[in-house]
Length: 140
Image (tube, rainbow, N blue to C red):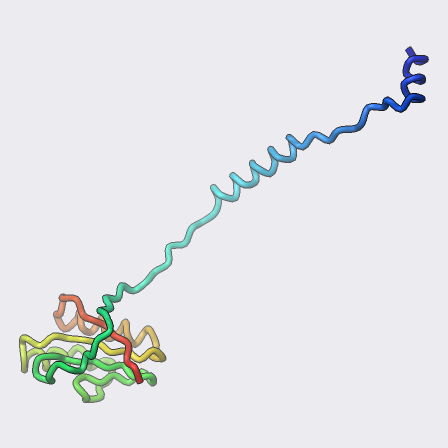
């Protein structure tokens, strides 16, 4: 037999070495499954904002609406009167006592901070207004 092997070598009929990729693919799939199973998915918290279609919000008269404006420097104005962040709920209660059918709307500047908007929304809820409040972007 050694003679046959030597003849095959002379004729160039060597067997080529083949690499078996099956074990490597098994390891890759096991690692993929491990990373998918151990991954932690984070649920992002967001504030639900009901934004109506663009329209001129200032057309309604002062008597039938309470307009809260949040300016770029985070100043809060209710019907044109600048108020402190802590007094927003009291001012809304006062305005609703003067005209009970008044609707409340919020105009927030795009450069105002989100925590100011959240504070105003919380003050609206604290004032006892449970209906949906439109929040629009102030265009100035």
